[in-house]
Length: 171
Image (cartoon, rainbow, N blue to C red; front, side, top):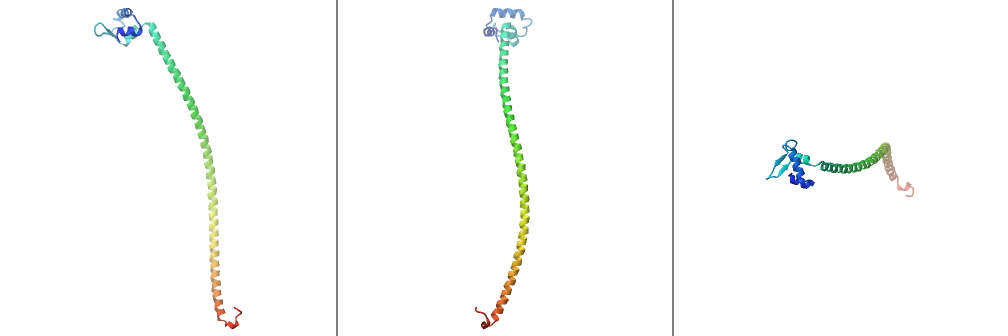
């Protein structure tokens, strides 16, 4: 930054700045000021800071503090918002966990019910198998009896046919 730019930016008098430069150029400002085009002096960051009056530095510090305070307030707002979000998320998580517990209990109940139904089905299947076996045996016996009766009927029919028609009862 040039001396002219420094004076314009901070409303400083050229005379005051040049007086301070000449007083400190060989000590504190040594190596921080260079001559640029013609008579213009170029100041580095250290030199600019050194040449600023205390009231300007105080104003800069106040502005910086105010900026930090604003940033802090914004961060506080964000923190409060994040806390609220976290609380809501926690409430939702607790609700989901409670729902999950209820669902797990319902699943266990359904498993027990299913197990009981499976047991009933198994018992009914065994009972059905026993009844089927009994029914098949009864059917075989009835088929055997039908076969015997059919054979007996055939024999009786043959005997009846062998009797002369005059000895038979009215057909």
